Length: 81
Image 1 (cartoon, one colour):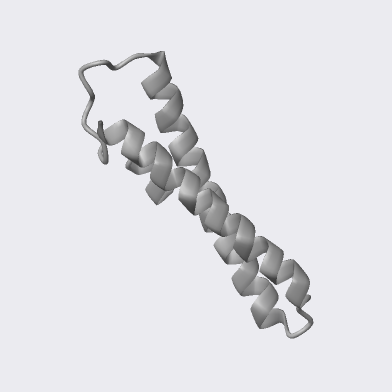
Image 2: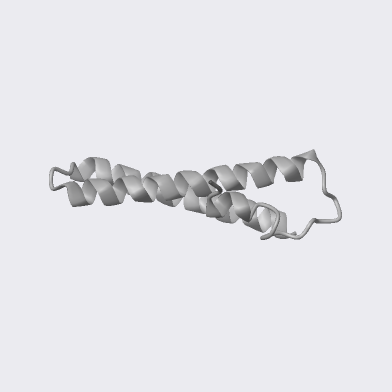
């Protein structure tokens, strides 16, 4: 089964004129981060809905999720140029 992130690896970004191993590595990292962000979102949701949630853990997960989102945006910007 393909995830949304896997199916869009080559569809979201046009090949830049300088397509190299570095661009490929960035695309792979982008997909990995998208999956991590999705997994983190699922974890936060499950913990919040469990009723026995640890607020400090949820806060830490949300902070990490934002860091991942920032890195996703940074890599996406690099791939667009």
